[in-house]
Length: 376
Ligand SMILES: *[C@@H]1O[C@H](CO)[C@@H](O)[C@H](O)[C@H]1NC(C)=O
Ligand SMILES: *[C@@H]1O[C@H](CO)[C@@H](O)[C@H](O)[C@H]1NC(C)=O
Ligand SMILES: *[C@@H]1O[C@H](CO)[C@@H](O)[C@H](O)[C@H]1NC(C)=O
Image (cartoon, rainbow, N blue to C red; front, side, top):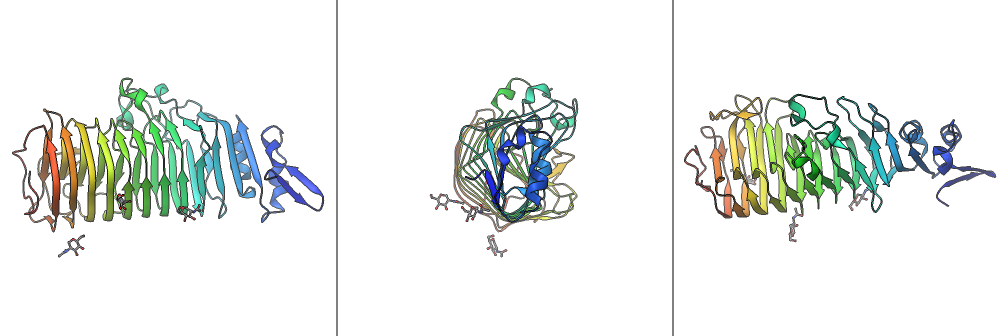
């Protein structure tokens, strides 16, 4: 029965929206705004119809939607309490543009994938080894911006052209059981495929993520009360904070990254702050993190970034305080470095450092201004 709106003998079968053109649902349903209605959209006009009708449907089912090239599946400004369900395979046309391919905003929103649902970016059409640093202009995948008290769960994304989730302006947002599989891109030029970029948000929980990509599994540029737990990250650059500094929001406060595995990645645990900038990183905990097949650094904390690269010259403007490293264990490859800490004078303090057991790799001789609890 969820597909019907019934009022004074009038029945509208919302599921037919995708088949009928022009769409009857938006006009009819607008009159019954508070009525529960489930609308199903599919095929090549599904995205446009869904965007048009989005505030008339309490449940939006996106079933095998083919999003046209150069357009966003626009689910911004949803009504409070709207539920969005992806079914089947969502595909996207090819265009060189900035994206995003999907954008969702609202309060008390839930977004979920039905069993077997996939959002397939078919990123190979863009991959040229240059990521967001040049070559073809590549669309970002999923904007989760300005979501309040909302949940995104069981979404599977394959083959993202470039960065996957952009989480910004969130207030109490849970992302649970998200799968990102960009493994095909390892040998075919995928680059800068960050899984979760978090900025300007308060209260983001990312639990049970399974990520295979070619850049940060998590990158927190700013935000407070962020949790990442139960994750598995493979093929990328590790679980990162930063680069912090040089943006409009440069505060990272109270972050728990726990119970996670990082394998076959450049780094395990990473914090980077921008040289010459101001800001702060405080109250960050990395707990129970298992490493294997790490090729650059097991743990790397450095305050010397400039234009996206380390300079070797740390500054003190973005202090890292109240850092707890508790139980980071496992192995790095022989050419890698176990731990590298490069702090400015006095700008790393009040750290705790327990249960760090990293085997393999080299010992760094370039660490500077290490707080007393830690060691390289
Ligand atoms: C999101 O999930 C949390 C925890 O499971 C739950 O308490 C909350 O009601 C959910 N919110 C929505 C909008 O589904
Ligand atoms: C990590 O796992 C432990 C043991 O299951 C649990 O107590 C803790 O809450 C988890 N951490 C997070 C942030 O969920
Ligand atoms: C040290 O860090 C802990 C954890 O963030 C915090 O609770 C405490 O207030 C900090 N102490 C000082 C002296 O800054």
